[in-house]
Image 1 (cartoon, rainbow, N blue to C red):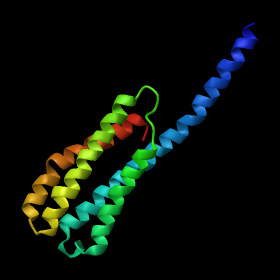
Image 2 (image 1 turned 90 degrees about the horizontal axis):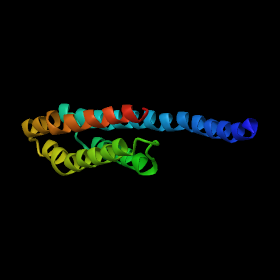
Image 3 (image 1 turned 90 degrees about the vertical axis):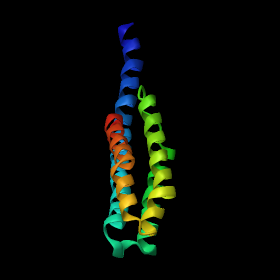
Image 4 (image 1 turned 135 degrees about the vertical axis):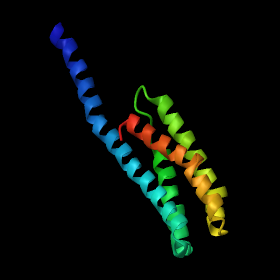
Length: 137
């Protein structure tokens, strides 16, 4: 009787453990993408010679890559609230980036851009990275 009940339990445990590295790997990759998105924007902000079409495309592409990965991911079991917060934080970060921060940089309003980047945007990207850590990355 015990043997019969033990097999399904062990099989379930094996399935759960096998999926953990995949989920952790997804969040580790997401962490790298978040860093790349941040770095591309910081480069644009701090280097006036890096504001041309190539850098603008890189800034857009790195942010879009984060959004695309998040759209394909699922919350780890028991961490649905953190995953939901991560998505909301990223969405707010990306919207402000696209509608306020990048336009300020391209318009040469560096002081405004630095305030925005060092204020709410820093808080958001820091929180996103913390949440990724909590989720396994």
